[in-house]
Length: 139
Image 1: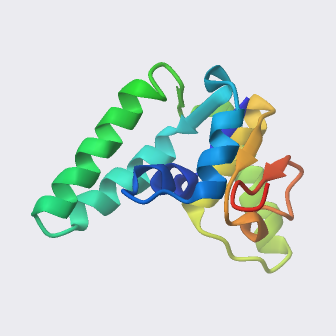
Image 2: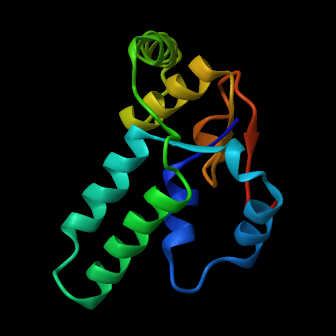
């Protein structure tokens, strides 16, 4: 199982996709690709903040298509186990003086609970954790 972080999912919505990311994605069996409810929140929330117009409409449509075509039945919730993992991560990071975005901590908790690999461009935001990481921009 490979969980796509919000930045990977967002890159796939762009009219001019990054070739490295597209090549990496095309090499993965589609059934192994998942996203999280937290990424849906991040992306949808960002899209809703854009000014109304063609660009927003095109990106909203691309995101809706992606949810149906790529992620139907494969959006992982922030459930109890993920919340417990996230709490441990957050407490450990606070003790070590590391301040990270709460949503990244939630995504990490989901990935840990599923024993999955996280595909992200922001490897440094997760490298202190015991989860497998892949950067599709350089993979």
